[in-house]
Image 1 (cartoon, rainbow, N blue to C red):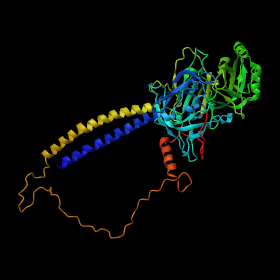
Image 2 (image 1 turned 90 degrees about the vertical axis):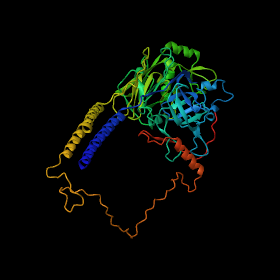
Image 3 (image 1 turned 180 degrees about the vertical axis):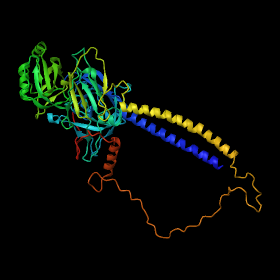
Image 4 (image 1 turned 120 degrees about the vertical axis):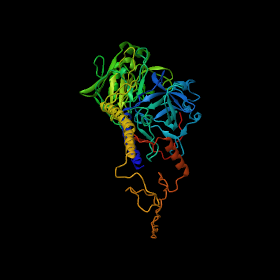
Length: 575
């Protein structure tokens, strides 16, 4: 019996060792896979239509709310918010097709998943904080709702409970998709709400906080739609250069502008600009007044102070079409510069209602406000911009116009993964160390299986055979016959077989000394974010609701806050 017990115990430890080895190997392989597997970039679907009142722009399509409402938005490289047009954005006196011109309306009242942002309890109306340095103002109704990419039924991914603003102001005629991964903050209590980009990364929908964008245009290859890739870029859309520029969230995509010249070599920029922003929110190019004067002379432009645009007469427009000048922007700082050339067709835009009463051609140049210089959406028609917020770098490249344009999506991986990128449509290439680790892991698993087979089959059988032999052939000094139990002499065998003891354990007295009593600490009330002893329950419930709607996930190092810090009600916005 004792021999059998030893045999059985000896059979247990191989299983334990083998199981531990298997778990360690699986964990190691799993760790390699988790570090090496990243989601593919997200391609934002084009609406395949051209929208806007300051030109014809390739828009992108989204669904908002439940049931879904289709809206068309334009990318904003400067914004971190998502805007859609409020029903108040089209009034009874507006054009009958106002809703179509503005990319369709989003009626929050018709959505069962809409929740107003009542961070300040009394209102969901907050000021818009975009392009304020250029003199733009407005208000938006902020709340939370679901956002889905693409048209209804296209199967695009959905992000729930995203921060959204509905706007009525016509200063921003179309809704916007902010591409900046900054967080929005509606109070001073450090409760940031992640942007659309940040939410995509938090939910592992994109491989990195990065994007590639070009606006597209109507004058190349019988119209070329815009391209927007989140977490990567389309290498088929630009001529590669080896330059990259550093930036930070506070200053945006700012870059030096060394020169502006015409195709004939005429200089249009009197002095270099240290920093000009690449901002697709608006179509305009904002330059110093002296540079605007040079443009006026070169192209016979006239400033219309009433509408604040360079409107063109039919004669001026025809002359420019005949002249067909090209304009080159030299970006960067010598010797690290890149040239982006725009044909006149890129500047040949039309202004329409409500900027002007009738559609009129105009030149998208504006005089800078507060020394704020901008290369707007016009520039993005011929430029492809790639931005990586995790490395704090971006690049600007000249668009290329191969016919056909065969899409080639490249993944931008996070900096701690690898410096290389791979096509999103293929399996991501693993690092050499990861491949070696998986190979060694596979080999180790095979060895463990062989070891298990040996330990669990051959060795136990041999031990059982040995145990049987020992039982069948006892030692020579041990007698096999026992004397009767009642005999007055002892058993010949030296081996003593004892019945289990029946001893009663000695009682142990309980210590009569006093013992300390340990109490659980009382649950303290949650700290109030407002310096008030008697905080209204409505505020607490609303704040808790907002925190439940916002994602409580750790933001990336790139998470500068923008605080609206509203402490008093804001009146409802008006168109």
